[in-house]
Image 1 (tube, rainbow, N blue to C red):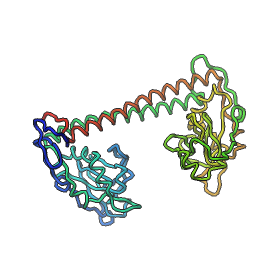
Image 2: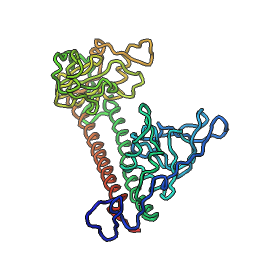
Image 3: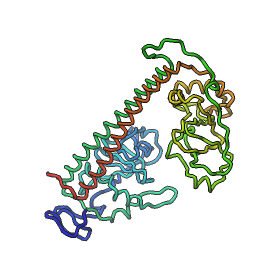
Image 4: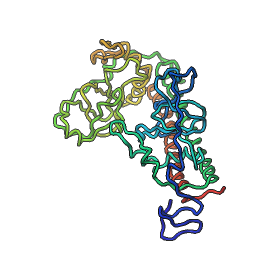
Length: 408
C-alpha cells in the first residue's frame, strides 16, 4: 500500500491509501481460515508426526524436528501438507512453517489455510511487519497469545491470485538462497570443528613441524585475575546469565545497570582476559572459556574465574584451544562432582596446575592462522546471509504492498 498526492497510472486512491487498481481490500478473516480439526492421541492407535513449538525455528520458517503423537497426552490440531503453521503462543518469536507432510501439532500452533490467498503467498504474508504487529497485540501477560478475535477484523490489501503466485515464486527463490547459505555455514562450521580437533591435538601437523610437543602447566603461561571492582565506575558488565561464561556483546549490561545495582566485589575483566564458569554441565559440548576481545573494561560475577595469558603472541592460539572439545576433556579430568553428578566444579588451584600440550610458538601461530582463515570464510558467509535476508525483507515490502508489480 502506497501513499501519494498524485495517483500514478494503474493505481487507485482508497480509504487505506493508494493501491494497484486490481488489488482488493479484505478483513483478515476473509483471507485466512484457522482449521479446527482435532486429534486426540489417547483415543487413537494412529502414529502421526507431531510438531511442538520447540520444533519451529525462530524467524526462519524451518522445521527443526518432530516427535511421535503416541508420546503425547493432550489433544492436537491436525494439519495437512501445504497448510501454514504459526505459533500463537509468544508470537513475537515468529515461529512458522509451511507443511510438507500431513501431521498433528500443538494446540498453541495455528493451522492456517488461505481462503482468498494462495498458501505459498500466505507463507510470505505471515512474515510481513503488519501481520506480526497485529499478532503481537496479544491476550495474556505471562503467556501472551495472538488474539484471533482482534486480528480477524484488521483490513489487508492483497493482489489477485496469479500475482500472489508470482510474488510467492520470487520470494521462494530468495528463501532457497538463504537456506543454501545457512546449510553452507553449518558445513563450514563442522569442517572447522574437525580441523580444530586435528590441529589442536597434534593429530595433523603442518609441513616443517615435527618436533615433539612439550607438556606444561596452565599456570606457566597464564595468571589469575583477582582485581575487584570497588566503585562501580566501569564501562560494561558481563551478564551473569551468559551460558558457561560466554562473553558476547548482546550479553552485556551497560554501566547504568552497574550504577543502579551494587556490583562492587565483581572481578574486573580487561581486553584479552579470559572468563570461564567453573560450575558447568559435564555434558557441555565445548570448552566454557571465552576471550574478551573488546577494548573496554568490564566486570563479571565472582562465580566466574578470570585469567590472562602472559604472552600476547600466543593468545590467538589459546583462544581456539580453550574453545575446543579437545580442551574440554582436560577440564573433565580435573573436575569435582557434587551431589548433582551432572554438574562439574573446577577448583582454581587445580585449574592453573592443569597439564596441557604446548607446541612451539611458530606452530601455534600457524595453527591460529589456519583456524582464523576458516573463521573469516564463515564470517563472510554470515555477512552474505545477513545481506540476503535484508534484500528479501526490502523486496517483500515492495512486492506485498504493490509498490513494485510483477508480470503474470
